[in-house]
Length: 401
Image 1 (cartoon, one colour):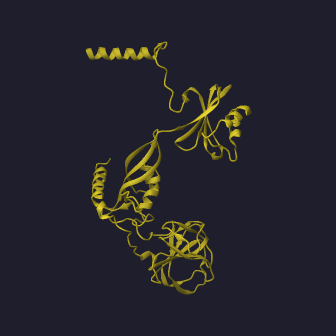
Image 2: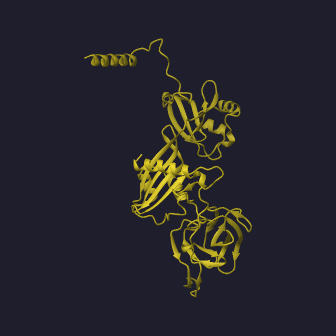
Image 3: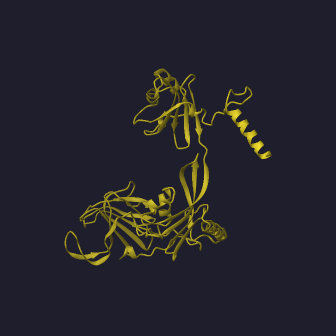
């Protein structure tokens, strides 16, 4: 009975506080961090037009020419009109009704977290507001049913994860050969702003499995001065000296052979490379770090060709290119994964594709059978830290959270 009486008493207090006139001593509702209560106004949105100036934008959304000029004079260092971008979101807040209204506030979205608020009625002034963000560690279990992209979405994970996983496993997993049932158990850090996921910072851990037999674990180790961040549980570097392929291709249209009938000339002759069929303009990347030893047109049927020397053992060639990326010329140094050119059909070619070649000690080898050596392993002094992280993440994913 006492409990019921107490509940009724509390409920009565709540009813009294919600109805009737406010007490003279009651504190007013606090102003939110942005500086005004958006719910008090009629809200509409627009986007900055191409070539639109700040005064023109202000006039378009409701300020008079005089007030737009005054607001422009008060921008100071708070807002730079030169940094306005076409397509940027602008929120507008009006008082009144749909027939007669007055612009009270405008909010320009510089980024997803940084806003500039313009007070457009009475005294004209502006201020910046940075939306608060937080880091979250999240676990996702992605099982392949149709494609990595679709199954990532179905698992409720941000699609940014797809690019992260592709980069991490670029040397160990054939993403064009994923099979139904393949599994990516992933722990990642994301940045969240007011309930909205802004972006994925990085993947902390992932266990890739196929049929529960093949397993590749990736653990992120942020070691100062070391760009190789992912290692397996033994401390082996997941990064290899060479990528598995120099582009995103649709299919292998011709394999390495010493007796292939040429599709144009009809003659049987060696084809000491691999043809990757891909759409015109598809970016082609360097298979590994190295130096460009030639980049130009060849008269032997290869069209636009780039050759890169990676070390004293390996050289790679990229043929039939539509064109070269900026800065790609003889003597230029390139990084693994750097765009060097674009798929074309130059030279003796029946359609857009990349003819990719690899030489080992000056002799051509089959790129599809090349075994790439690993980059440097994790320094031994970090092995205890690696073991601790691996155990923690495995426990996390085995518990399903």
